[in-house]
Structure formats: structure tokens, C-alpha cells
Amino acid sequence: MRSKLSLIGVPIVMIIGYIISLSFEWLFPVLTFGAAGLYLFLFAPVQNKFIRYIFLFIFVINLLASAALYFGI
Image 1 (tube, rainbow, N blue to C red):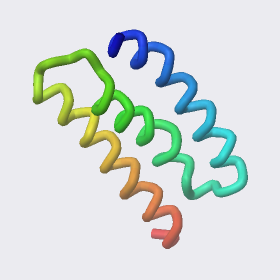
Image 2: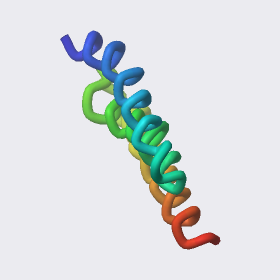
Image 3: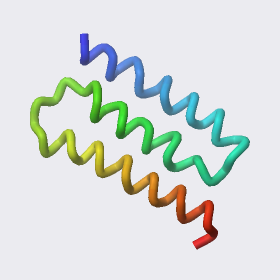
């Protein structure tokens, strides 16, 4: 069941994030790729902790990119 959630959910999360980021450009990194990375961290059928933490790292990097865009860095 988790593999189906990860296959179906990632495009849905990215589309919703893209639609929201049309209004707030600085949220684009965290709402698209960052949210997809967090979603995969939670629902991916991967048991390897290293791979799961790569998904979490993707979320954190995109969160920092959104903060940089917000503050104009």
C-alpha cells in the first residue's frame, strides 16, 4: 500500500504545490520538490535509512532556498 501512496501522491503533491506557488513565488522550491521529498520520506517503501534521509535532506535544502528567496539573498 505504501508503494502505491508514493507513486500516486508525489505528482499530486507537486501539482498542488505548483498551483499554490503561482501566488507566492518564493514558496516554489519548498512546495514542489521539498514537499515531494518530505512526502517520499514519510511514505516511500524504502527501508534503507540513508535513502530516506536523502529525501529529508532534499526537503531541508528546498526549505532554505525558499527562505533565501523570501529574504532576497
